[in-house]
Image (cartoon, rainbow, N blue to C red; front, side, top):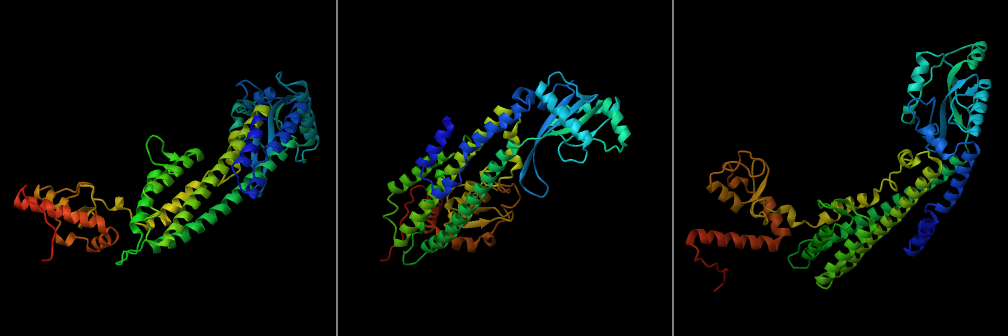
Length: 467
């Protein structure tokens, strides 16, 4: 009762859109149907303890059961089935652990089955003698919970069937249930509706990402008139990557973040933007609007994550309660059989974050992608070795002076073969265009280092000046 109240309260408190709330898992309704499921099973003599013994039989038990959640034919709709393999002798169930009600039920189904073999309920029965086939069926009772039991399709006359009914044989019967089908019909329908909702929200967010990409690309285009917000947007995206709002790459907490942690990281990101006064430093007015849209996009994604989590918990709780009341073990099988690619897979945040990374954040080149792996400064002027690894020219010159032949990254024999032809002129122009400040700093550092090498430690670097 407590979770049902908390579930409703959270839906109200988090200010989700009304059409989202309408599609939330109907936890209260499912609890009522579950009560009918448990009552139906108890009326049939299948209390939780009896079902537990059937579904997890002892090695020497003459009966076993399996509860299946399989799609019905070509339909994706799940059809639950409770199937029991039981040892019959003279038309009577041979097992002392059965309750009188469940024993009577099984015997009635078995009798109906032998008289009406063409009916869909109960399932097919195959009589066998006390032979190797019978021993095989008994030995497979324990593994029935994990594998299908195949019975031989022996054709026999009505007289043979009647004689076999009096002898020992095994029968595979389906226990007729009603309310479990209603339970899973409701639950599967709601999971499918939530999947459709999240797919729709994901498409809307992808559309916004594409639009933002065009806008940010225009705002960060390098300009000779300094009418560009390239540096500001680079800082914003660097902070966003550092925040790791929805996914962490840290060793201690790597993987998807919970909505609570994501909310804290998003708050940190916004506070860092405010601390650096990035909004006021924009040179183009449209950048402020684009930043608002970017923050709103993250807020929408966070809201989707929160809604996804609370419905996941509701499903987990109701399935756990189902197992507690019935011992049918659906909490593990339902998520697999329902094939939910959004809600239960939890893929929305992952997909949108990947989309933002490839289509939006990558619009603004990050200096971390252009660092020299030796000095960890921008790889200006870039030397591309024959092994395709890139280093700044100063580091390559130093390595060559030490007569080191092997690439520091892959150990290929390429360093001493490098010459002026290995300078990547196109990449050098790209760096000057998108990283003007960093390339100037690296050029100045190279000149100072070269001056010290030529003139000694007393060398003082002076900027060029026009007299």
